[in-house]
Length: 398
Image 1 (spheres, one colour):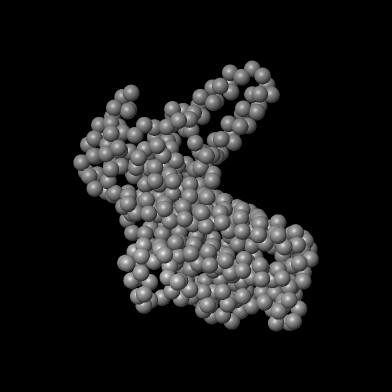
Image 2 (tube, rainbow, N blue to C red; image 1 turned 120 degrees about the vertical axis):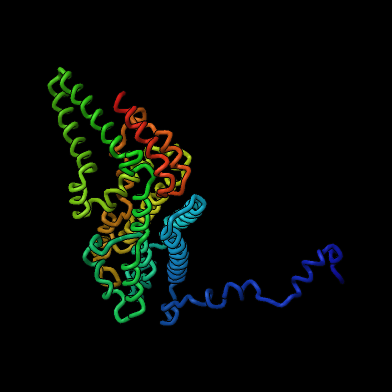
């Protein structure tokens, strides 16, 4: 019996179905993907049901790591040249895609947690000496983001222990360490932030004046305080604030913090990040501000993923058992939760240097004109020089 709806089928669709070409499974190479789950417990004639879940989950992680690296490489390529506004929008879109993938990976840990410690113990012996520490893609992901060797915990520094004689893997890691990371490229971009030029708007000079006025007002308020305990507290707080601002205004103090690993960005890159944060409501700084927020989201989500992983490991093997790859297990993983693994830690600390909105130096007309140009462009600087000098003289007279 013929199908009664046959006459209603679109002839174009019918013709498409009859054309030669790859089918769904062929295009996705599902024969390889779906046949890539090798259960060692089955090969040992002692099948463990949850080993299949363990394999599928980690393979899914690796596929998503591959996509994140793919996006990161494309973003790094765009940052390697002078950005146009349309490219900034594309970078924001791709960073947001990475953020959404990382959210998925954070939630994926919960699926593994449906496995009990006893279930895991049934097949854990088959995993030795394999370990998540041996994930080449996660190591590349960290390097491409900007995790430096000197910031890693000692065990995490020796990748030859993890990859042994795999020269291809070791070469890939070395290449990723030598290439400009996303952090390096973002810093170069921030250093070109319009308005940092000393002979232009000179945001840094204006910002320092605003901070000095704020400190002086705080000193006067402290002197007027009659309550002795409150006065001591204010003096202590004032000294702390002075030290903080000194660390951002004094390049030598900033350099010392970078050498100790407490900061990552160059001094000028930090200036650019602070300026973008202050003027985020300006149309030209809107997308750069979104970009900085997405970088913090990436750092936050990787930290959350590490944290969820640490809790799961503690639940599965406890705090004392060694990892299958020879690490200290839970203790090693817990050590990766510190700020030393945050690539964009300076962005998290920007709020330390904020001043009240009404004290933020207003943008000059010349500066607003410059914001219409390409990021970091020097065009029209000559035309605006006289305008800047006029506005500076007006400021002095006021």
